[in-house]
Length: 515
Image (cartoon, rainbow, N blue to C red; front, side, top):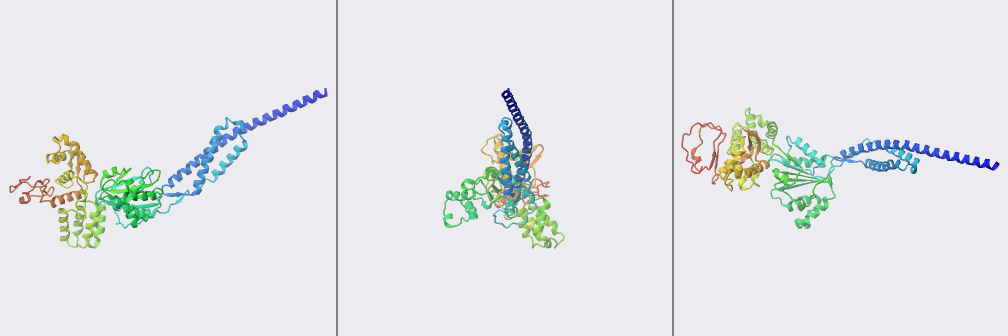
């Protein structure tokens, strides 16, 4: 009987201990279930904090260098988030195998890491890139364009930027200002390279100018072929975040042949070039094309007045008005304004200023001449010269212009004007892309173009310079004449224009056998 009691008591104790164990395990599971949501909430907070810091770093990386401490914190946060996400994902399925202590430890680690993720600054100023500062004229009204280009430089999706505009409009000045800005403004580039290309586009010369930045200038380098120089340049640039500035492109430059790695999101490098043609921007695969425009009247006068100087302008009360006429003849081109402004510094009589106006009406602007036309095909050049028969600022209907070209035999490979429509459109588009013609809206429902004043002056100069040839031009369009010009000058004329004048009657019968 006594033994039965002992067995019963032992069984009861065993059951009680078993129940206590089960109750303890159930309580443990309950605590685990309570801890997992807490861990999940902490994970969400850490993830949000990580995302905020990463956004700050991404923004700062455009112009600044992130602190290593911040980068380390982000790396550790990334690891903790990955581990916690896996733990929560597996938690409910493997509840019996989880360790409450492990959960608590991770929860504490996340809490501690969150507390260390408060930074007063996430980045420091990046040291200025290695750059050779270049002399530059003080530009006028280029600030907004510089800011536009600088924003493109900061855009990770833009690797190649094309700056195009009329010769003398200030593209080289703009590129020079950008070059110098890299020496004073924090940026992410290790090296800034400047190279003049010009119309010959000689790959070897471009390589020599780039190689000079790296000390490649001895005889052994100069004696290498283009194919041998390219790997040397590529070897230096491929491990650097660089920016290459190419000035005055007249045609496509093969970056691979030069040895320049193509800019991309991966390497973070940039290529900026200047050209006179929008088509070259396309051939260079520019992701951003920015037109550099002529100065507005007020800004043009401000630049011209600065170059002439108040002493000359105040020498006679009539000089300022005459000076404004001279400035107007420059058509808003900074190069022309600066060149002519310097030339007029010592001109302090009314006669000298009036003479300057007459000269500018007859001649091409100094230093510009016919450089704009060097890359045009002969047929296209003739089509452009034909446009100068119209008065200054005249709205020329595209359709009528193509009809003139066709009738003049400038599109003589076609038998019908309808067949010449497409190539005629192509010529107009090419001239617009080269900044030699400008879109000018509509007139009477027809699309129109016009010539920039300076381009018109240059074309008139060209036609005048070669007046002895069979392509003789005689143009007094828009000159406000009340009587006919000297009819003796008409004898050898093949193309002439006296439109937009006030001539009511011809006093003499002109002889124009070639007209």
